[in-house]
Length: 77
Image (tube, rainbow, N blue to C red; front, side, top):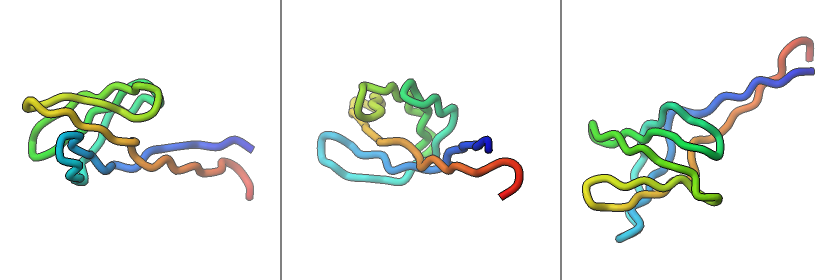
């Protein structure tokens, strides 16, 4: 059986300076490569560093593990 996978639309984004977390919307997810995070009308392009996605905006650094990945089966169950 084949499987389809898709990603959730949100992820938790952490400010590395003060460790505050906020939920953000994500788009253009490329597994282990990059993603775009959107917080309060600001777009943060994030790159994979081998463990987490890292991005800089407004003079601050942000990290995220990315959105949840969902897998669905195709065909008969």
